[in-house]
Amino acid sequence: MRILGFSKKWPKLRQPEFTTFRLRRRDRDWEVGELVQVVFKPRSRDREILGIAEIVEKEQRCLLCSSVRNCRRVVAGEAVADGFSSLSDMETWLLKAHGSRVLEEPINKLTLRWVDG
Picture 1 (cartoon, rainbow, N blue to C red):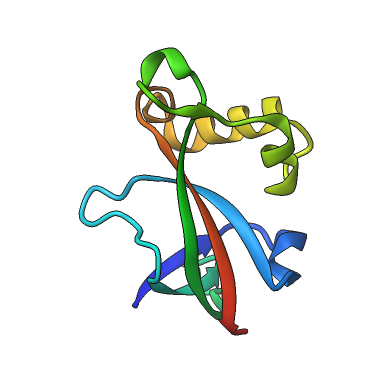
Picture 2: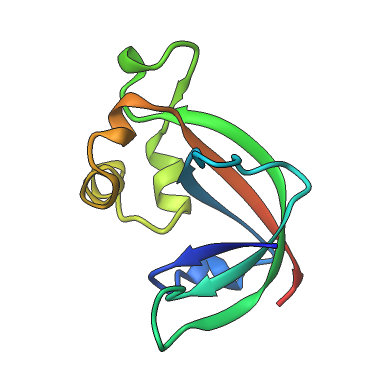
């Protein structure tokens, strides 16, 4: 079972179903039906396992549609539902965390449902 890490305890993590945006994995991309271990601070001594969730939906999104064909742009409502104050705030965070890769590749919008947590 793979780990889906979070660096912040977002309020959305207390809901039965939540979304998160993730770059495609280079080894094996996220898949619908996959069970993941949701972890707060996965690379820290303060690591906390929050529970097990199932990926119930996966959609491709992009920040700049001109760079990725046939991809829907992330909209403000999705950014706010994901826990950011605005789309601009989300874009700034993604660029800081992942660099230009978020402008050149599609981003997975994953919808997860808690199985145990």
